[in-house]
Image 1 (cartoon, helix red, strand yellow):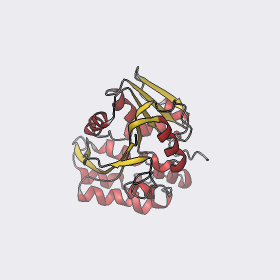
Image 2 (cartoon, one colour):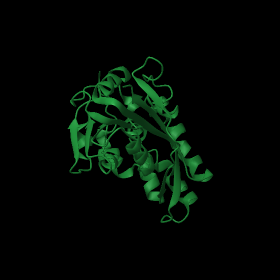
Image 3 (cartoon, helix red, strand yellow):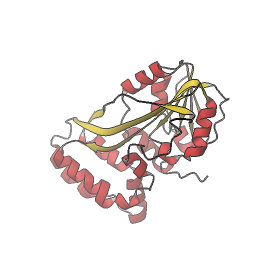
Image 4 (spheres, helix red, strand yellow):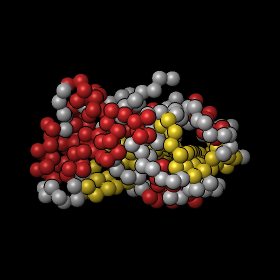
Length: 255
């Protein structure tokens, strides 16, 4: 399988501009896991989810095929970072209580990854993957954001983005009768941050499609709307609520 690296070239920007996941999600995962000994965070990127897991699990094994992302990841004493693909995990069999994939499952080879997740999880262990798609601020800001998201960078999104927009409902998962995992219904979680306009613009620039647009055209698509976004925002220091569509898919390893 070829590793499609969409983020190493702007790993620092990605780390600094991305929203945090809901703390309630990690509290729920810690309650649902059979124990809190070991969590594997696959496709960990800059370690955002890894750090949250480390506050709730004794040990976190965090992997990503991008050495640059791992180099930019936040260190914690109980996190072990490894540069390796999710489809080739070096953890022992039946060793993890929880396997998580934060905003990365759409980059994996599903069959090969789920074979690894099933091997690594303990009986009764929990798998969880989540993704966030489009965001909302105000109607005026949203219309300008859509100019970048749809009109300008639309052709530069990879096809895997469709899985995110579908809330991971179209990715084949080994759930159901006779499958290795029994699907677990997750509660609804609110993904929201309060940002000023500079943080919001940095987020738009962190998109992989934005970076590909810049590489292909030599210009920044966000710059075409920046003045209007600032005008629609008002006071540049004012922090506004940014909400995302947030989706979680979970399964429990059959015993």
